Image 1: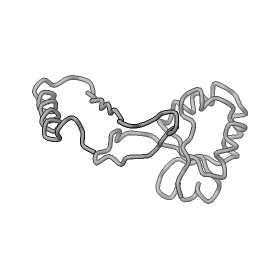
Image 2: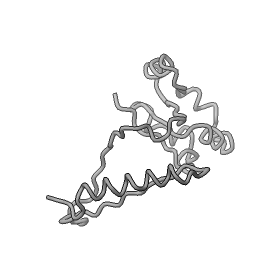
Image 3: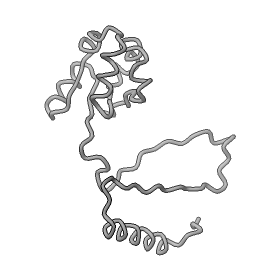
Image 4: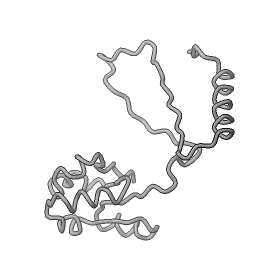
Length: 140
């Protein structure tokens, strides 16, 4: 299956955009959005598809990530200098809204080990979910 736009045209357009952004320097980070239309895709039959794409460049080099983990995963995370919190540390929040909100603002994203991810809503309440930072499952 081929796309409507030739690859050369897309590459040329991206090159022009990058050149223009260098010529006229701005005081903010510029972004480019890519929209893709899928042919022969029935939304009724094929509900959803999910996946991850590894980018060649790091999009946010200063991203702060914390790990919510059991004892084994916590020690591994701390060994590579990633902040990690166990169940006892999370229980200290005692479902108080303000400290949980402040905790959510401190980090850009959260990862959680498989054993603890189901208990996080029970321990912390809806705070992380409301902040849009519910933890992603930490792959082994």
